[in-house]
Length: 198
Image (cartoon, rainbow, N blue to C red; front, side, top):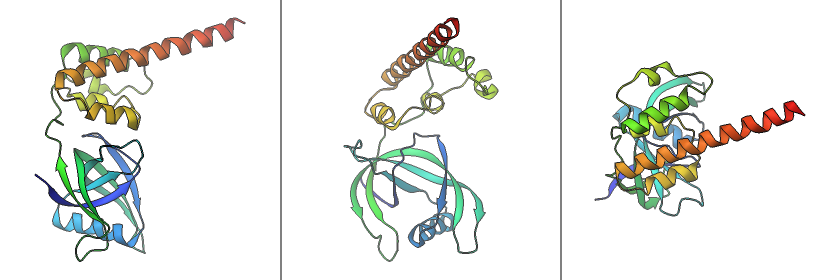
Protein backbone atom coordinates (compact mmCIF):
# COMPACT_ATOMS: atom_id res chain seq x y z
CA UNK A 1 0.00 0.00 0.00
CA UNK A 2 1.41 3.39 -1.05
CA UNK A 3 1.51 6.30 1.37
CA UNK A 4 2.05 9.99 0.52
CA UNK A 5 4.90 11.72 2.34
CA UNK A 6 7.05 14.86 1.92
CA UNK A 7 10.23 14.11 -0.02
CA UNK A 8 13.72 15.60 0.24
CA UNK A 9 15.94 14.31 -2.60
CA UNK A 10 19.54 13.88 -1.39
CA UNK A 11 22.58 11.79 -2.25
CA UNK A 12 22.59 9.98 1.09
CA UNK A 13 21.11 6.68 2.22
CA UNK A 14 20.57 5.98 5.92
CA UNK A 15 19.79 2.67 7.57
CA UNK A 16 17.24 2.61 10.40
CA UNK A 17 18.71 4.05 13.58
CA UNK A 18 21.38 6.08 11.80
CA UNK A 19 21.78 9.82 12.39
CA UNK A 20 23.14 12.68 10.30
CA UNK A 21 23.16 16.50 10.34
CA UNK A 22 21.71 18.65 7.56
CA UNK A 23 21.97 22.34 6.77
CA UNK A 24 18.59 23.56 5.46
CA UNK A 25 18.77 26.71 3.34
CA UNK A 26 16.39 26.45 0.34
CA UNK A 27 12.94 27.98 0.87
CA UNK A 28 11.11 24.78 -0.11
CA UNK A 29 13.04 22.64 2.35
CA UNK A 30 12.75 25.23 5.13
CA UNK A 31 8.99 24.90 4.60
CA UNK A 32 9.23 21.09 4.60
CA UNK A 33 11.13 20.96 7.90
CA UNK A 34 8.86 23.52 9.57
CA UNK A 35 5.78 21.55 8.45
CA UNK A 36 7.26 18.32 9.81
CA UNK A 37 8.08 19.97 13.13
CA UNK A 38 4.67 21.58 13.43
CA UNK A 39 2.77 18.40 12.58
CA UNK A 40 5.23 16.02 14.28
CA UNK A 41 5.67 13.89 11.17
CA UNK A 42 8.64 12.44 9.33
CA UNK A 43 9.76 12.90 5.74
CA UNK A 44 11.46 10.80 3.11
CA UNK A 45 14.99 11.18 1.80
CA UNK A 46 14.88 9.93 -1.78
CA UNK A 47 18.38 8.60 -2.47
CA UNK A 48 19.46 10.32 -5.70
CA UNK A 49 22.26 8.10 -6.91
CA UNK A 50 22.61 5.95 -10.03
CA UNK A 51 23.40 3.01 -7.72
CA UNK A 52 19.80 3.16 -6.54
CA UNK A 53 18.08 1.11 -9.24
CA UNK A 54 15.26 0.07 -6.90
CA UNK A 55 14.35 3.62 -5.78
CA UNK A 56 15.08 3.03 -2.10
CA UNK A 57 14.87 5.90 0.34
CA UNK A 58 15.06 6.54 4.07
CA UNK A 59 12.16 7.64 6.24
CA UNK A 60 13.56 10.12 8.77
CA UNK A 61 12.44 12.32 11.65
CA UNK A 62 13.91 15.55 12.98
CA UNK A 63 15.54 14.81 16.32
CA UNK A 64 16.87 18.30 17.05
CA UNK A 65 17.08 21.77 15.56
CA UNK A 66 20.66 22.62 16.48
CA UNK A 67 20.59 26.22 15.25
CA UNK A 68 18.23 28.64 13.50
CA UNK A 69 19.62 31.52 11.44
CA UNK A 70 18.13 34.97 10.79
CA UNK A 71 17.01 34.05 7.27
CA UNK A 72 15.20 30.92 8.46
CA UNK A 73 18.03 28.54 7.57
CA UNK A 74 18.71 25.85 10.12
CA UNK A 75 21.05 23.08 11.19
CA UNK A 76 19.12 19.94 12.10
CA UNK A 77 19.87 16.42 13.24
CA UNK A 78 17.77 13.65 11.70
CA UNK A 79 17.35 9.98 12.54
CA UNK A 80 16.30 7.26 10.08
CA UNK A 81 13.30 5.26 11.25
CA UNK A 82 12.60 3.12 8.19
CA UNK A 83 13.24 2.40 4.52
CA UNK A 84 10.87 2.74 1.58
CA UNK A 85 10.59 2.24 -2.16
CA UNK A 86 9.59 5.37 -4.03
CA UNK A 87 6.64 4.67 -6.31
CA UNK A 88 5.73 8.13 -7.63
CA UNK A 89 7.56 11.43 -7.27
CA UNK A 90 5.99 14.88 -7.49
CA UNK A 91 8.13 17.98 -7.99
CA UNK A 92 5.69 19.83 -5.76
CA UNK A 93 3.39 18.46 -3.11
CA UNK A 94 -0.09 19.94 -3.38
CA UNK A 95 -0.12 23.56 -2.10
CA UNK A 96 3.50 23.26 -0.98
CA UNK A 97 6.90 24.40 -2.27
CA UNK A 98 8.60 21.07 -1.60
CA UNK A 99 8.36 17.70 -3.39
CA UNK A 100 6.21 14.77 -2.36
CA UNK A 101 5.93 11.15 -3.25
CA UNK A 102 4.01 7.93 -2.93
CA UNK A 103 6.08 5.33 -1.12
CA UNK A 104 5.85 1.72 0.01
CA UNK A 105 7.54 0.99 3.34
CA UNK A 106 9.71 -2.13 3.46
CA UNK A 107 8.21 -4.45 6.06
CA UNK A 108 11.33 -6.63 6.21
CA UNK A 109 13.36 -3.72 7.62
CA UNK A 110 13.19 -4.31 11.37
CA UNK A 111 15.95 -4.10 13.95
CA UNK A 112 15.89 -7.83 14.77
CA UNK A 113 18.01 -9.11 17.62
CA UNK A 114 21.52 -9.98 16.39
CA UNK A 115 22.70 -13.57 16.88
CA UNK A 116 25.18 -14.43 19.66
CA UNK A 117 27.87 -15.10 17.03
CA UNK A 118 27.35 -11.72 15.40
CA UNK A 119 27.34 -9.85 18.74
CA UNK A 120 30.52 -11.63 19.87
CA UNK A 121 32.29 -10.96 16.56
CA UNK A 122 31.14 -7.32 16.55
CA UNK A 123 32.33 -6.62 20.11
CA UNK A 124 35.70 -8.22 19.38
CA UNK A 125 36.01 -5.95 16.34
CA UNK A 126 35.00 -2.86 18.37
CA UNK A 127 37.85 -3.51 20.82
CA UNK A 128 40.34 -3.01 17.97
CA UNK A 129 38.96 0.44 17.14
CA UNK A 130 39.89 3.86 18.49
CA UNK A 131 37.27 5.70 20.53
CA UNK A 132 35.46 2.57 21.72
CA UNK A 133 31.73 2.98 22.35
CA UNK A 134 31.44 1.49 25.86
CA UNK A 135 27.62 1.45 25.63
CA UNK A 136 27.79 -0.97 22.69
CA UNK A 137 30.47 -3.11 24.35
CA UNK A 138 28.35 -3.64 27.46
CA UNK A 139 24.95 -3.96 25.75
CA UNK A 140 23.26 -7.37 25.77
CA UNK A 141 20.49 -6.25 23.44
CA UNK A 142 21.97 -5.33 20.05
CA UNK A 143 19.86 -5.33 16.90
CA UNK A 144 21.21 -5.93 13.40
CA UNK A 145 20.94 -2.25 12.48
CA UNK A 146 22.60 -1.14 15.73
CA UNK A 147 25.58 -3.12 14.47
CA UNK A 148 25.32 -2.19 10.77
CA UNK A 149 25.35 1.53 11.60
CA UNK A 150 28.65 1.19 13.47
CA UNK A 151 30.45 -0.45 10.54
CA UNK A 152 30.53 2.66 8.31
CA UNK A 153 29.28 0.75 5.28
CA UNK A 154 29.23 2.56 1.96
CA UNK A 155 25.94 3.23 0.18
CA UNK A 156 26.35 0.27 -2.19
CA UNK A 157 26.76 -2.09 0.77
CA UNK A 158 23.74 -0.58 2.53
CA UNK A 159 21.63 -1.11 -0.60
CA UNK A 160 22.86 -4.71 -0.78
CA UNK A 161 21.70 -5.16 2.80
CA UNK A 162 18.22 -3.89 1.84
CA UNK A 163 17.89 -6.62 -0.77
CA UNK A 164 18.31 -9.37 1.85
CA UNK A 165 14.92 -10.72 2.85
CA UNK A 166 15.46 -12.44 6.23
CA UNK A 167 17.12 -11.46 9.50
CA UNK A 168 19.23 -14.65 9.47
CA UNK A 169 20.73 -13.76 6.10
CA UNK A 170 21.32 -10.14 7.20
CA UNK A 171 23.04 -11.57 10.27
CA UNK A 172 25.33 -13.68 8.06
CA UNK A 173 26.04 -10.74 5.74
CA UNK A 174 27.18 -8.61 8.69
CA UNK A 175 29.32 -11.44 10.08
CA UNK A 176 31.08 -11.76 6.72
CA UNK A 177 31.45 -7.97 6.51
CA UNK A 178 33.15 -7.76 9.92
CA UNK A 179 35.52 -10.59 8.93
CA UNK A 180 36.32 -8.65 5.76
CA UNK A 181 37.11 -5.53 7.84
CA UNK A 182 39.33 -7.59 10.15
CA UNK A 183 41.20 -8.97 7.13
CA UNK A 184 41.77 -5.42 5.85
CA UNK A 185 43.13 -4.43 9.28
CA UNK A 186 45.56 -7.36 9.27
CA UNK A 187 46.78 -6.46 5.78
CA UNK A 188 47.32 -2.81 6.74
CA UNK A 189 49.23 -3.87 9.85
CA UNK A 190 51.39 -6.23 7.79
CA UNK A 191 52.21 -3.51 5.23
CA UNK A 192 53.10 -1.06 8.03
CA UNK A 193 55.40 -3.62 9.69
CA UNK A 194 57.16 -4.33 6.39
CA UNK A 195 57.76 -0.63 5.78
CA UNK A 196 59.05 -0.20 9.35
CA UNK A 197 61.41 -3.19 9.05
CA UNK A 198 62.85 -1.88 5.77
